[in-house]
Structures are given as structure tokens and as C-alpha cells.
Amino acid sequence: MTSTKSLDKEFIAGTYARFDIEITSGKGSVVYDDCGKEYIDLSSGIAVNTFGMCDPVFINAVNEQLHKCQHTSNLYYSEPCARLAQILCE
Image 1: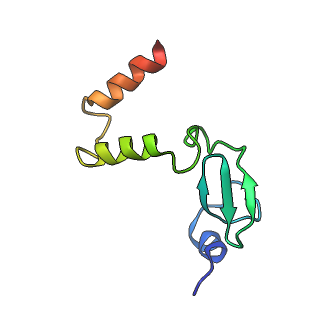
Image 2: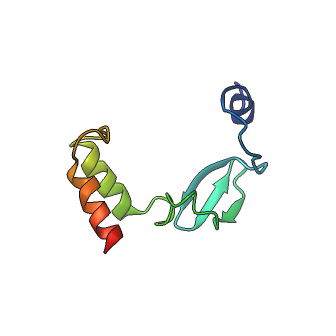
């Protein structure tokens, strides 16, 4: 079986250096690597993990939206997009 690091090196553009850690799971602000070692995640994942890992409210919201429309181009209007913009501006 090909390792994640080998696949990454072959198929993902090396636009920045990676830490030598493969994160495989997490809960809240704690993540685990492929050897089971525990870390406190302080990186935030470019603002996508602000709820922590596996947050049930976030998961339910995403799951609910996936059953409606998982993606649409910004060429069209979308209520979730407009509501989020309103919240961010307020």
C-alpha cells in the first residue's frame, strides 16, 4: 500500500513545506497522528476548523446542507452564501 506521504509528494503541488505529521482523526482541539500520538491543534486550518474537530453542530449543519445542494457556482444566488455574508458583515 502506498503511504499518504508518497501520494502527497507525487500528486500534490509542493507549494509549501509540511510538518512531518499525518493527522488521521481528532475531536475538539485534539488531533491524532497515524501512530496514535495526541496533539493540541493550534493551527485552525486556514479558518476552516474554528469549531474544532468533529464538532456535532458543524457536522449536522453540513450534513443538512449536503442534502439540499452541496455546491453551486458563485454565478448564481444562494441563500446560505447571502446569509453568511450578512452575518460576517454584521
